[in-house]
Amino acid sequence: MDVRTRFLKYISYPTMSSEDSESTPSTEKQLALAGELVAELREMGAENARMTEHGYVYAELRETKEGLPAIGFIAHMDTSPDAPDAPINAREILYTGGDVVLNEEKNIVMSPEDFPVLNEHVGERLIVTDGTTLLGADDKAGIAEIMSAAESIVRSSAPHGRICIAFTPDEEIGRGADLFDVEKFGADFAYTVDGGALGELEYENFNAASGKIVVKGVSIHPGSAKGKMINAARIACEFEELMPKDAVPEKTEGYEGFIHLTDVFGNCEEAQLSYIIRDHDKEKFEQKKQLFKDAAAKLSEKYGAGVIECTVRDSYYNMREIIEKNMHTVERAKAAMLALGVTPKTVPIRGGTDGARLSFMGLPCPNLSTGGENFHSRFEFVSVDAMEKMVDIIVKIAEKQQ
Image (tube, rainbow, N blue to C red; front, top):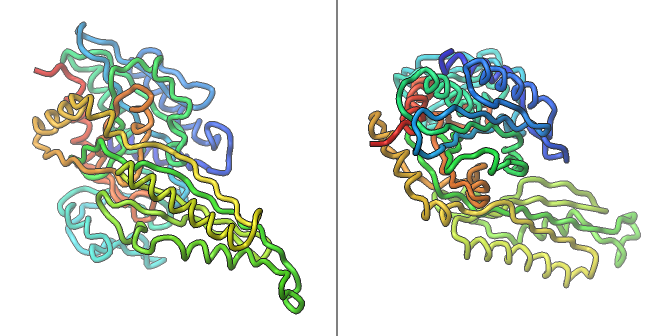
């Protein structure tokens, strides 16, 4: 089965994860894809292909030469809750430039004016949505590429060490590594295949935290409210006004961090604000968290004890400090790309991957591209040409290096 066919098959499985669930996986529907992957791994001859009770899929390809490192490849099965995951109506186009009409009936158009990245894909075969759902290339493109590479490795006579494969649930809600068994996975180092444009090679990511503000107000008839009402919604707005205006996602890029308001709920009696706090630099990360706490403390002093509840929790850290001690992982990937005519582009991840947490769990794990673009949106697409090249790159990484 070629990578394109695999991808189209995998995106037919809706696998959106849910932050509202405490179980693992957070949604039962992820298990359907997990079961399919186990069956395919067994059929292609992978060893010990299994699914855990929490929906993690593991398998190995037996080494063909002793003394070589055990290398892992990892992708996640869930899709983001940021856009609908079904029904995914995908189609392949040959992109020749200009606008792409995703849905004529609903007048949904993907234009290079809005998405300049399209200009980098002229002449390529692209798989797009109908503009009503996400596509699922994040990260079913990575799954399809690993599975196709694994099948190629099984059929190849090229010498390689043990190849370890894993597919995780709930990465999109930050829980993909929660129950990952690094010891039983058995790799000396690994790669998540969960990036964007072909050639991207990432080993720096944000330090990340979540922040939550709960405002407890007092609701009373506005006609007799003087000196009695505490308007929680208004205080929540006041908190947001204390946040930096330029350190937000829509005004930052590269290594610049941000404090991002993700959700708002409120009325006079109670209001809640949810944030994510991000920065590549550890010191600046700590400063942003402190700014957040200081703003809460300022309003607590103004309105009294018990009105403001502030919670800040770290989510993951920048894997750079781990990978810099294991740069052979990056160099191996660069060499594979160059050997296949792909120019490596080392860029910082403006987000996180399972690999960030796995690196701190003892498994150095840089991130590889998949060929997808516009993730988490109805304008998501993936290049078939890039997916095919990524299969070759994974195989080359797995082979014995000269």
